[in-house]
Length: 247
Image 1 (cartoon, rainbow, N blue to C red):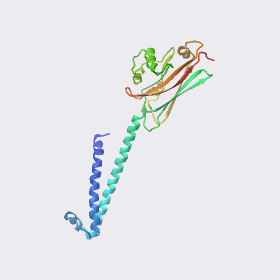
Image 2 (cartoon, rainbow, N blue to C red):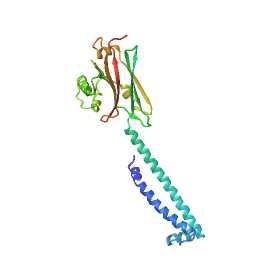
Image 3 (cartoon, rainbow, N blue to C red):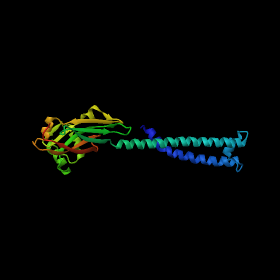
Image 4 (cartoon, rainbow, N blue to C red):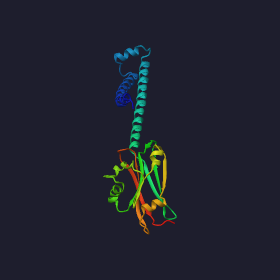
């Protein structure tokens, strides 16, 4: 926003208060004058004398004061509407998008991972990075350890995972890192919409991840997005079962 408009918005409440006090004083004087209660001050008398009927002069002052209050009301409405709009924009800017993840199985053992990004406010949201992480179900305490071990990284917390952006898809025994460029390359921003992308784990990928034959393993799959390079991420997770054989 232009600096002069910021200054105007800052002083507008004070201007409204000053005009309001002035308008109230004028209305009180003119109402009393209309009923002949008091004489006008000299400065106002000079104005009233220019009008043939003194009471008409009072009425004219009264209508002018009403006009002042109409202006005050319009300024106040503008200021209040703008304040609420700015608060809404600020809230929407910091409110992130909503995520969904769901697993569907074909022929009981081929998993398809469905992901969604939902932006239900009228403010575009940029996505810097989005990816899936599949890891063994060994408890959340081992989650970062599995990431660092398989990606050769040294992340201390999940907010550090924005550092995975340059890494290409990586699949190994009991682990998978799968970037989802659909969300951050094909779609520059997420408007007031729902974006959906589904990832099907192929036969070769299944053999790499679930390499122990004749065993069925339980995994956790996490869907991560980052909206900024250094900000907080959003993520959601669900259970994933990888079967040892494919029909």
